Length: 250
Image (cartoon, rainbow, N blue to C red):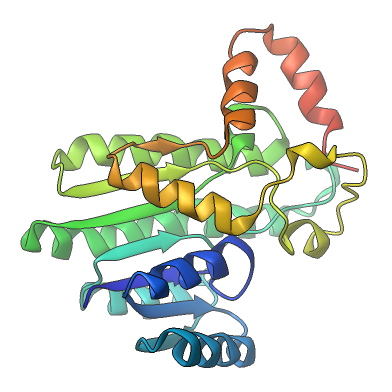
């Protein structure tokens, strides 16, 4: 039975990955800061799907937390989903530098270190996959969040090219607005986001798994967001910057 590790596994896209992979027969290693919620999530998955679920409480924005998860990855997993992340409500100049550095630690350093920890074992076995959860924001300009997610996309594509094996896949997943706890936790006012732009986490994961199977290096779930990204590449940069600054950052 293959094993998948999912970071940020207790809510939103991470929880949707856990459900999908458990249904596919994966044993799971779930990573989250919230130990009690982690245990509850594991219990539900075991009961519903009958799979083995290991829990690993860790704060991936700390060196100690990263070291714990790196050690487990070196023991071997078949699929790593780097999903843990968060957003800021305010604009760059209004956010404390400590919060910005924590975001970079989690979105960039953690993704890099965990990917580096898991890939040697995958190369030795000749198979495996890494999914790094980025965002459609990676293709636009929205402060440190979009900058960090742009790094995730570039890193994933670069790593996939360097690995150079069709049996070892590295993919960046770039969803748009998804109905999760993400915006609520960041205290963002998203009341102005049109209803048709919201995606369901399970749909995002299902499309991501399809794209991973197809060997794609970047997955943008849903035709609406594929169109938005495509149009964004064609219109003047100054206009995309203006629109990006006004959406979802109240």
